[in-house]
Length: 120
Image (tube, rainbow, N blue to C red):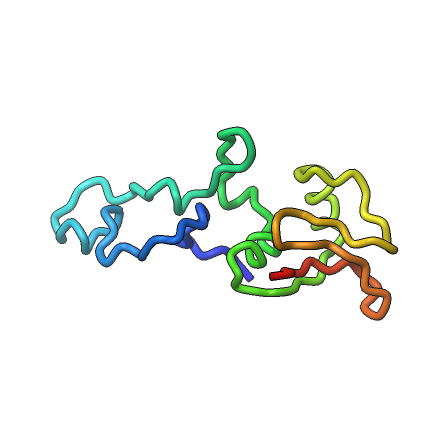
């Protein structure tokens, strides 16, 4: 699944704007400077006020985080991303690890791969 261009990556629980300021139709047909996009659509803050753009985020993790999916099968690239960017040093096959609140990574012997799953 691809992250939509205007998906709210800040995970804020407020209503969507009926007429966002960065859209041309919201400002009229004669509007200038139409390349502006709200910061919450460009990426999200990760860690200590560090901003990560949507192209740098892992699509499977973001899909589970935003509750668009409850489970994803992880590839080797996804595992490397998790080990590099999260506080997990290793992924043992016998014990599930918590990636962040409400999401775990565990080994599924039937699928012969790691699974990312929402617990709540």
